[in-house]
Image (cartoon, one colour):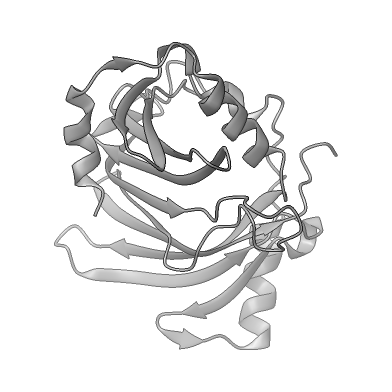
Length: 229
C-alpha cells in the first residue's frame, strides 16, 4: 500500500524548510485535537501460530480510568468482569507526558519534495528520535502530502526501509506501514475538516524476546487535546 513511498526517496528537490509544509503541520497539530483509535493486537508463538489477540479502543480525551476500553478478546466479545479487570490494569499505567510539541519530532530543515502535482505537493520528512540512542529513526520514511489550495495536510504516510532495534536491541521493529488520509480544511465550519478519513490504517510488527507481535490501528477520530493539561 505504501511501498511506493520508499521509491520516491530518490527524488531530492530541496524543500528549504517550506513554509507551506511547516504551516500545514502546525495547523493540523493545533486543530481539532488528539487522535482516538482502535488497536488490534496479535501475539504469535515462536512457530508462527497465534498465541493471543485482542482489540481495544483508546481515547486520550477520557479520564485516566477510561482511556482504554477492551472491545474483544480472542475474537469474541468480552464480559463486563473481563473488561473491568483488563481496563483497570491497562489504565493503571500513568499517562505518558508530552513535554515537546509533536512538531519537534519532524526535521523540517531537511525535508525534501518528492512529488509536485497541480493540486498537492508531497514532502519526505526526516523524523527525530523521541528517545535518542533507544529509538533510532533513520530507517523510517515519512511522507506528508499538503493540499495546495487549502494549505492543509491531505495525507501522512510512513514505511520502514529496514528493521530497527529499539530499547538497546531488546525489541526490533520489523514492519511499519502508515496510511492516513486527511480531509483538507476547505471549510472552517465543517465538523470533519482535517479529520482522518475512514479506511486510514497503520500497522506495525515487532519482535520481542523471540515472540512476534502485530499491531493494527484503525477508526481514527479527532478528539479534544489534553496536551496542555
